[in-house]
Length: 120
Image (cartoon, rainbow, N blue to C red; front, top):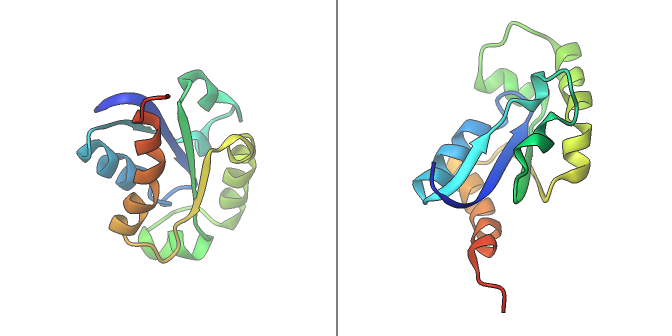
């Protein structure tokens, strides 16, 4: 899982949560992706007590281009509702439409590195 403070990643389906988590773990960071968007509780992510909360977002059309889905725009809108608390509390919000996995990981690494820096 990596070491250091926990980085928790939430976001709509196919926004890049697993990709980012795997990429950060490969760099040695303690990272978990969490399917908050399917939760019945909008605040369930808080139980993980992350040091850094990253929220990923992409448009419905991007989801359709990334993955074959059996649900429609209404379910997407419900995911956005379920993620409102996490969005308001997120340390980082990243729009992933058009980002490559490498670009996504590179955008987050500097924030995670700051968690590891000693406080002077």
